[in-house]
Length: 109
Image 1 (tube, rainbow, N blue to C red):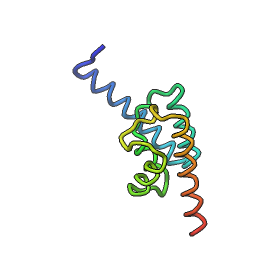
Image 2: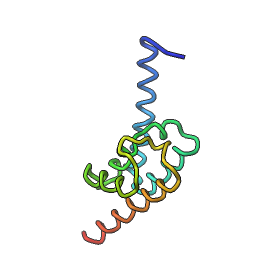
Image 3: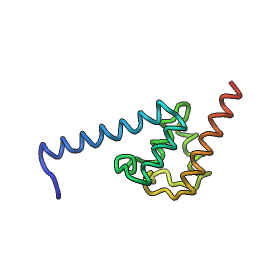
């Protein structure tokens, strides 16, 4: 069903708000939140599944665009890929790389 007019705006605003809530969960909880969101994206959560993986990684505190690019490359994930399209191996590799990066930075500080 295609929605046009004011109702379409309301539907897209609601979806955008739900995606923002998912990103804020990652920003608040860090690696644990990223792991949880990626599991939900693979299972049941359509909002989480429709978010680009690069946006999720950048939402982790301390992760910038260059960090994101490097981690996604190492995990063999396309930057434009959606969270719901990741394989289980990609999810595990990405969370481990983000977690390791966070721990190394904490040890250096």
